[in-house]
Amino acid sequence: MAHLALQGANRPDEGSLGAPEIFPEEITVEEEIGSGSFGKVYKGRCRQKPVAVKILHRTFDKRTLLAFRREVKIMSKIFHPNICLFMGACLLPEKPCMMVTELLPKGDVESLLHDSKVTLSLFLRMKMARDAALGMNWLHCSNPVFIHRDLKSSNLLVDNNMNVKVCDFGLSQLIPRDHKVKDRQNAKGTPLWMAPEVMMFQEFNEKCDVYSFGIVLWELLTRQEPFSEYTSFEVFKADVCHKQVRPIIPADTPSSLSILISRCWSADPNERPSFEAIIGQLHKVIIDVSIRDEAARDFWTIHFIKREEVHWPEFLEAFCKFTGLPDDSMRERNIKSLHALLEPKKDEGGAEAVSIEQFGRLIDWFGLKKSKSDDGGEDSIFDRMREMVQKTWFHGEITTQEANQKLSTLPAGTFLVRFSSTHNGSYTISSLPQSGGKVKHQRVSYVEGVGYTLNGETKPSLEVMVRDANDLLIPCPGSKYQSLFVEQSTEMMGYE
Ligand SMILES: Nc1ncnc2c1ncn2[C@@H]1O[C@H](COP(=O)(O)OP(=O)(O)OP(=O)(O)O)[C@@H](O)[C@H]1O
Image 1 (tube, protein in one colour):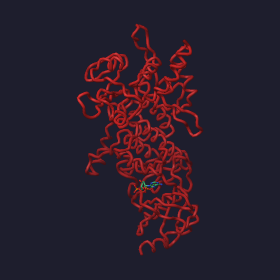
Image 2 (cartoon, helix red, strand yellow; image 1 turned 45 degrees about the horizontal axis):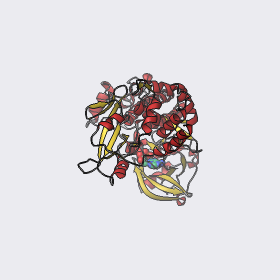
Image 3 (cartoon, helix red, strand yellow; image 1 turned 120 degrees about the vertical axis):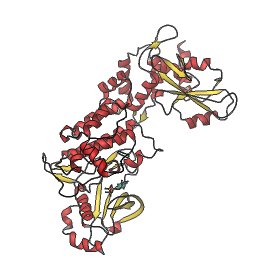
Image 4 (cartoon, protein in one colour; image 1 turned 90 degrees about the horizontal axis):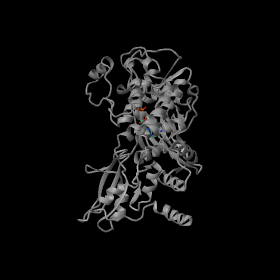
């Protein structure tokens, strides 16, 4: 009954919200996918399209209704690829208040980060951060300025292509550009992500969202909950506001990222960067977290800044020039090896593209620097790649499970060498012990200029390691690179 009274008294002039109207009969509600302070979110269908339907509690107070109406009003005015698409609302008196938005099937970033079964590389997590920053920049660039006021990882939603969109505008507010405002009563937002000036009821502007973004960046970096050590709100508030306590940034974080996080959550809002500046810095962070080798990083920055994927021909031309690949009889085989190891993915138009992540991993595995060859000369990265794919025992990027499947029915002493699926730059030797039993997986670390280390013993090449081992006897057949060399041996025969 309470909600009926409120609906009657507080819903004047629905048309002024300017939201496209959707009637309840047009919406089919399916399973629940989330809940919040206002009510629940369901997966549903509207006009044959899968959608998300946010339904207000059956009983709600005036504040909740105002927040819901504010959200509808704001969402019906913002359109950006990184902001959850508003599709319409039902605000009819006597009917449940509902808001229809696009469905983001992968749910929210917080749930994904804390699900240990979900693999999310740091590269992908930083791309997610940049998507969120792009959405936030759109809000902050509008005039008057939109302040979100509740930016946190659970208000970032993810689509099937892992694109991130900002949602939940229930606490958002508009302020004139270059102005500051103050909360008169309760501070709005979620305390763990709330800027100190907001918590202390001081004047604030859109930079309060940048503070929250700093906490989100830290969550994306660490996959942990912020401030989980606190049990008392008063102690937490005093520490954050007066002692400037912030979550600990892991020591091995690339400096471009740790500096960005620290600047975002500065105590002084003027020291926090704008989202425009954050986006620029995240382009750099994405390169830094994807490519560990400094020279390779410079290569990508000079040629492909702001791009995470480059078409194969463009990449090849730049990389061959950069490495000085000679135009000799090996050139074609070198390029074939590079292509096979990079495994460029086909984009929507069918063109092959090399990703920054894959490039970074390739450099970790093979190193850019020249190394000493067996004949006293020098081997380039191309020599190392070409020689590796020719080894019958080398199976490249296969998982532990795939290695188990390949080996399980073969005789003892059979082995293969593959890239480690968990440690960038390392290799794994999977073998069937001669003593019998299950497949054994041993990680070999590779340090450029030093060699390949297994059980404390370092060898100059994997070939030497395999040759010197007593129990690696029969190369496992079925390497995907073998077909590459069937053609090449024929070609070679042709040359001779
Ligand atoms: N469009 C959507 N697609 C998929 N899931 C969604 C969608 N909208 C919301 N959700 C899920 O529902 C949860 C709650 O939604 P939302 O943040 O809008 O609620 P809220 O009550 O405003 O939250 P809070 O109480 O934290 O302010 C989200 O964290 C997300 O898991």
